[in-house]
Structure formats: structure tokens, C-alpha cells
Length: 442
Image (tube, rainbow, N blue to C red):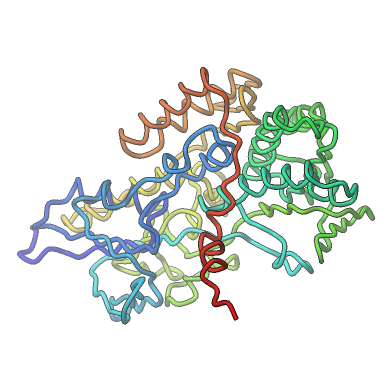
């Protein structure tokens, strides 16, 4: 029996888990049953599988994000950061984007701050590296790569040109492979407007610490991917580590050393450090420990009213042997969000939660325009069919009809119009010109 006072459900983070869970909760529960509050510092959810295409100019960057207030009209959206969760009191401390902190009490909390780049203490990485997890990083990388082409075309210094045209990507998972392949494809397209440069002038380097790429698929598919990248004259370094990049000089564990103006770090993720400000139990990898029902658990004790899923949660994978956990993928995150929302609704209505169980369907990856690799339900595809499946799958998964239409329009126009290859580097420091013009003169 639903009480007179609605339960407050606090959703921390509006990534794949947070957005999908909040959206489903707002549809399943009436305003008399529950109030859904979503806290995130960004006004949008980023659909990360589209970051490589946004960086390459295949779709508009705005179309790879979903505005929270448009999509979550039945939820209360708070623009801010959760700085502390005290579940014993069932209170979260929130720092709004402006103004003093505030406390938000809750009955149920969804802990879904996601993940951040997992970095290592490599000399020079902090100063010269860039990640590839946010739309800002994707736009910056696009502008930076195109800017390096301008630098190389304008200079007469051979060393400056080599450094400008050397692009280093660290990490051979899906993020690294797709970012590398899409950016190389874009840069090669752009060279038609640079008579001073030849494709052979560019050097694209992939550094991977293990002996294979794309660990989510079978070895033969990873080997196919490496072969395709080698055919495009890319420098693939397997079983190799980045040891230093001080002053832009890349030093590898195989003894090689070279200058590179572009160093992209895509070597894995780790749970958000925001979890350090909570009192929830965590495993050795700092993930929130969960039951298959997505309820937070401390040993054998279920922590009532606490839920988690996605990259920051250790969720048992019931399709595998005991001791295995769901991988940090969008595929699991979206399905976990739906199961968790249904379970929260069940608990509020006095029913029992249901275990999350999903056998990983497979993976798809783009290797540039009309190129791809896919392994779905045991079926393996390469080339154009894999690329088409990649686009079709992700178009179907991005939230909202509005975004689906805009992405399809972007792709359709690309069949008739040439790719935009202009750098808008001033976006990253828009006040520089005005500050110079308004500088007091002596």
C-alpha cells in the first residue's frame, strides 16, 4: 500500500545509468508514489559511443548529448555535485554550480557517478595527455588534430613538422581503437586541402601494454583490426608501455623515443573518486559492492534504500561462473538501469526485487567511415556490414526520438556533402583576443 507521502529517490549522476533509471522511474511511478531528484554538474548526458564520430565530424557534437531537462521533465534536476553521502542519515550534501552547499534527504539513493580515466604516474602525462571520455575532450581533440595540420603546413622546420604530425594513442580497447581510426580517417580526408602535406607525412601510433587489441572480442577479430590499421600505415606497438612523455617526448618500453604533439590516453577507467565521500562498502577495485538485484550490500547485509549500477558498481554476472562481474560497458549500464528502476518501484510497492541477468550480446566498433568490426551473438562481421551494424545499434540506443532523428540526418547529409574539416580552436580560449584588445596601454 502506497503511503500518503511520496518517497524521494535521489539519483547521483546522469550518465547512462542515471538518465535511464530516472527516466524509467518517472514513467513507472506516479507523483503520489515518488519524487525523482537527479543531481549532475553537467546539463546533459553524453552518449559516449558517439564521441569518436563527433570528434571526426560525422555527427554534430550537440547531437551526441541528451539535454537532461528536456528528457527528464517529470524529474527535478539539480545542477551541482554531490560532495558527500551519509546513508546512515539518508542525506546527501550537494554543491550547486553556484551558491552555498545544501543537504538533500532521500528515501532511496541511486549511486551512479560513473567512471573517470584510469591514469598511471607517468612523467609528463599530466601536462601533455588528454583523455577521451567527455564531449569537451572530443571537440578539443578534433580541433587540436586539425590545428596540427595547419602548423605542419605552415612551418619550414622539419622537426616541428614531424612532431606536429605524430599522433600517439595509448590504450587498445574500444575507446582507443575507435578514436585512433576515426581521427586518422578525418585527418586523411582533410589533407586534400593541404597541398603542402602528404598522407605519408603523418604518423599514427597506438601503444598497448598487452599483446592484443579489443579484448572484448575474439583474438581473430582483434588480429583483423590490427591488420586493417597496419594497411593504413599506422604504427601499432603491442606489449609496449608508455614510460614518459616529458616535454612531448614519448619514450616507450621497447626503447623507442620520438616527439609527439598529440598524446591521447584511453587506457581504461576507474570508479569516480566521488565514491570516496560516501560510507558505502567497496571492493578491492574501489567499486560499490552490489547484489544481482543492484542493491548495495555489505557482506551479507543488504543496505536498504541504496542502489548502484554501471562502471562504479561491482555487479555479479549471473551468466558466468561465480566470482565474475559485469563489464563496465554501455550495454550493461542501460539494462542495469532498467532493472534497477523496476526493482526500486517493486520495493516501494511492497514487492520483491528481481536479479539482473544479461548475457553480453557482443561488441561493435567503427574503424572510420564505412569500416568496422563486429561480433554479435557469435556472428562475426567486418568492413561495411560491421560499420552499418555499429551505426544502426547505437542509433537505436541513444535516448529520445529527437536525438535519433538528428543523428540520422547528420549521417544522411554526409552521403552528399563533404566532411567539415575546419578547426575552431578559439572555442577553448574565447576571451584571449578580447583580453589582448582591451589590455591597458601605457
